[in-house]
Image (spheres, rainbow, N blue to C red):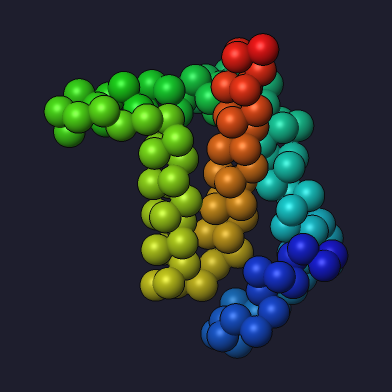
Length: 119
């Protein structure tokens, strides 16, 4: 529960959003929910969108072609995190924070996978 409050306590959410955010936190900590999205429901998402890491690798290749410069997988994770935080600055929504945390967790997993390849 503590982790969830790091992201929601002292944030000036409109009254209409506060009850939704805190109701959601009571059911599941935002960090636990991000863990479920990134690590525990991976097979379900693989069937629908491909693997998280595979999607980011494909995104980096496509972005590199479109921008005519090298865009790394790490860059793509950071861009998605920035997008979610940018959206949060316009509209305070639980899902923005949840998605940003999920991308952070997936990026850390990417770093771990890359490190394992060097062993």
